Image 1 (cartoon, rainbow, N blue to C red):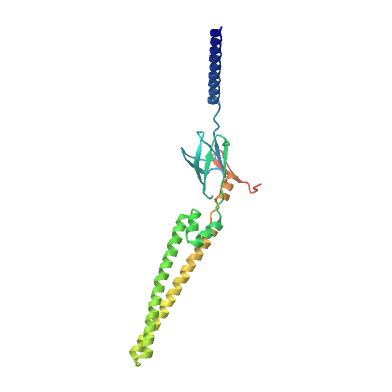
Image 2 (image 1 turned 120 degrees about the horizontal axis):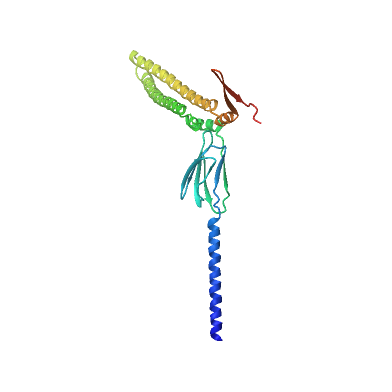
Amino acid sequence: MRSNDTLAQRLVRLLTFGLLLAAVSVRGQEESKAPVRNITIKSEPAGALVLLSGEHRFAGRTPFILPYHLAGKYRISTNKRGYESFRAEYNFSSSTKGLLMLKLDVRTAGSAALRSFVAPGWGQFYSERKKWGLLWVGATTGSLAAFVVNELNYRDAQNDHRAALKALQNGPYSAQQKDAFDSALRRVNNAEDDRNLSLYILGGAWALNLLDSVIFFPNHADNSELFRRASFGLSQRGDAAKLNLKIALDKR
């Protein structure tokens, strides 16, 4: 009787263990069959170059779908002409939503002007006008160098003028000392004129650089909006071809 009870207990244990294995196997198959939710990255506006760097590296233009389900921390950076660069860190997990939206800020003429005020040419580089940026860097650097040279010449001329004046006042009067004093006076006046002229040129270059950064600031956002509202058509009649261009002026 006792042996029968022991056998029955063993059968119950084996049956329970088998059911547990079957449940685990079914659950594993269901999880493997469960669809992996890929993540779509979009930006406003679209067409931004997005770089992701972490365990894996991805690059693409929005909107695009990540080919793998990501997990862990990733560095995200964007680049689009006419818009501020976007950099952030994002932690991907199983609870990450299927859509990642990136908002890009438009570059403005005010930001370009502030940069050009601090350092001539910086605003042009900011607005992606590199040739003009190099031009203004060269113009202001050359003007600054000329001002420094003329300022040093002016100080030397002042020292010579003081020495000639002192010699004329303290020593016996002579025509030679008078000629030396007159020559030193002309030199200091000419040096002062050159110093002032170079200072005006430097200030003018700085001001023109500031105006250039604002007046000729390229508005890429408005240009892209213009192209989105433009439609092209080509028609042919006999040997003549006609190109039609329509632009909706109303943005609503």
